[in-house]
Length: 182
Image (cartoon, rainbow, N blue to C red; front, side):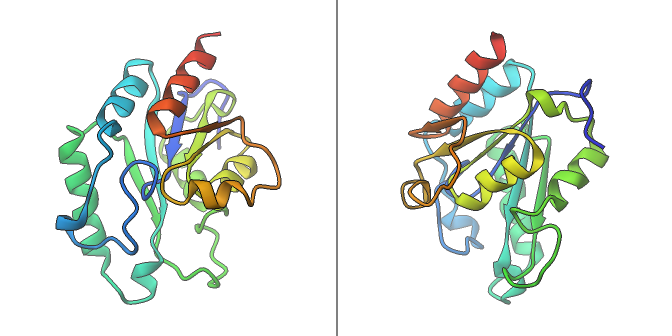
């Protein structure tokens, strides 16, 4: 259960938000960080936020890559960010599988809330797709749409306004920290 007295948390989409979008990323050599990724995560951690990745990975369900290949990508991300990310949650299912974990469903958020105490009032969902922002709305979080990855295309599809539309993750993080200080 999400709590009011838990830790403020930023839930981040992975592809197009934390790292560059690579369609069905499954090879470590194709992993590309934005040049500001480390700075953005450092700022969040310094401001007392837990940082959790929530990512749809239907490439597993499609048979394009394995869960082990995805875990290897996550391990490399952790290495590059010097173990600053608190957790990774993923949905391996196809978009039409009807599972509870695929964004914008709450399965990954509910699992994270079982594993960690989450302060609902001070938590955020940041992503580049409509599904990410809808997940934030569904969870009752504040939301930030970044214009990297699919952000420009998906930003035009929004039916509700996120709390912020930012050029990239670093800009979104600066806004989140500034609004948290108020």
